[in-house]
Image (cartoon, rainbow, N blue to C red; front, side, top):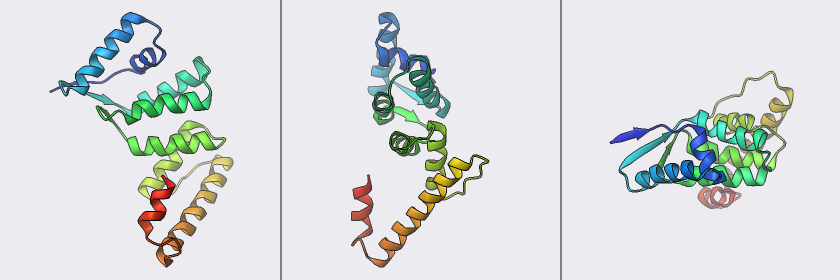
Length: 157
C-alpha cells in the first residue's frame, strides 16, 4: 500500500477551506485513506506545526484550535504518532496556561511513567502538582475509595 506523509499545509488548507484547488486535493487523499487505498502517516512534528500555524499565524483561539486538531486526531484513517498523548495534551493545554509543547511533554511523561527534566520553573512546578495528584488518585483507587478503578478512570476521560 502506498504511504503518504502530508505536510501541515495540507491540513491547514483543508481546515481553513480557503484555496479550493488545494482543498479538493486534500479531500481526495483523505477519501483514499478512508477507503484504505492509501495510508496517511502523520508525524508528530506535523501536529505541532498545525497547532503553531493556527495559533501564531491565523490567531485562532484555544477552543477553535483544540476542535480542529482534535478532529484530525480523531480521524481513524490517519496514522498519527502518539495520538493518545496528543489528545491528553490538548485537554491539558486547553485547561491550563501552558504551551502546547509543554502540555505534550507532561502528557508524554505521564504516559511512559517518566520524570520531566527541565530548567523551566513554571513547568516543573505544574508537573510536580500533577504528579502529586496522580499519586493521590492511584492511592484512592488502590484503597478502593473510588470503587472499581475502571469506573473512576472512565469518569476522567
